[in-house]
Length: 370
Image (tube, rainbow, N blue to C red; front, side, top):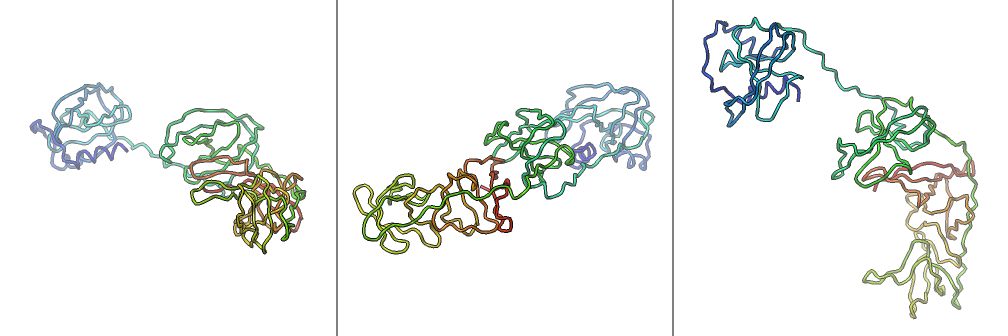
């Protein structure tokens, strides 16, 4: 709270002195003038007293302080006791339920001086492009701070500090909600649910973005077939990431284990598991089909979002997609085990975005809300 606001609040609250009004030669005009807040320089040394406030009444002196000649303070004459002046300043410690007064007759002990300039907090203009996480290289050494997060809110408490040297590579994104703060995500920085890493930077001169020229990666993934016969059982797998559970939530079958399947119709299979035949409906427009080869790319239910998940990159021959996998422009291939938690609500993933024009995949970092 500003000094002037604190004095005004004190007077507006109706706090008054128990000291009786003393004789004073000041005119009514002067009293009205000096009862307003003024910034002054002391013409002589004075002693000020700290009074305790109880039940909106100033009663007991709890401390004294000597101010030297030339000291600059805020003053306001108390109309209820014309020889008493409210005193506040940066060099005077303020306490709850306590206030400082000087007992002075007249105004020869002070001289009005120029009010100090109050600088407004500088607003940094950072292009919205930087509000998404970018892979950058530092052009100079910077300090990063791990701030405490409490009840999903960033606090002012700094838990630890690190220095990242020039040339270091990391993920960075400007936080438009915190002036001058950049969120930093890196495997070498301790990530927890109760903390976040930031660096304070007024511009983008401390780093440069690292861009890899596209096309970068060609498709090398395999495609599983769904050649399940309708006249006998063969070994097959459920779509990756799709497990069967019973009414109690217990897993009956999982996508990592081979089972015996027989096709009944498009999208409907009979599966033998745990000594029983189970009807399985997969392979519709929304779900991947049963396949004779185990898949490791999750596509089921993700069509509308135009993304897939896998621990393997699309350029890795170990990646196996289901037979109904559709490759289209802008498809996002998310590396499932690359997640880096930014804060309580955001996670950054390494990803590849397909370009039909280039017939190739371009690496990106994508941010998702939790």
